[in-house]
Image (tube, rainbow, N blue to C red; front, side):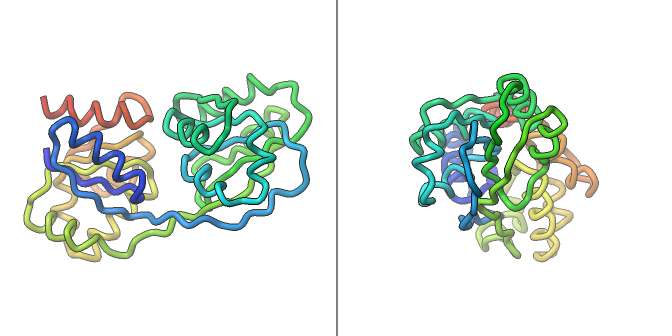
Amino acid sequence: MRLLVTRPQEDGERTAAALRARGHTVLIAPLLRIEPLAADFGPGPFAAVLTTSANAVRALAQHGRIGELRRLPLYTVGRRSAEAARAAGFTAVHSADGDAHDLVALVAQSLAATAAPLIHLAGEDRSVDLTEELGRRGLTVRTAVVYRAVAAERFPLAAERAIAAGELDGVLHYSQRSAAVFLRCADAAGLRDKALRLIHYCLSAQAAAPLTAAGAATIRLAARPDEAALIEAVSSARS
């Protein structure tokens, strides 16, 4: 299949490589750009680190307190963010193998008796408020915003031309926000109708929500909210 990957550049390149290994033709069009932010964590000590994205761990790499945090257990949503944490020097890494709600359940069970605060390394835009969700379960969470995802105003020219010429079969969507940005870029190029006729492979129903509301013709959801399941959804459709 001829596919468009809209993830930020680093993640998009990795996804493209995995898809090309399965015989797909892939065009990368990053619709979000990750910018690290200086974050004030406040006083410790902390009991554990929480993340919902590999981007948070990457943004932490240059922070002056990374050494302090590396000594703590880290809880994250899935395999990719767990790999990023280990690459950043964290050794006690626990993955929920799901989404942010699965992470909440894992942390609530694993750290139920913890009195010290947890530190959540987050992006500016969050679909689940871990501070609120875990607060209901008796845990204290301090959120530190360590990165922002800046939305593109237009598709890269190669992507715009490919959509206009009907040279793509499908597009992969990893978040609700990036799906919404995809639609805005399609509008900016005058390509909404053609964009909606593509097959939209989405990580979850939440990620698909803007496309569903816009009337996308074909939406296919991953069986689980992780990249391996999304790529399998693409390959299953091909066969």
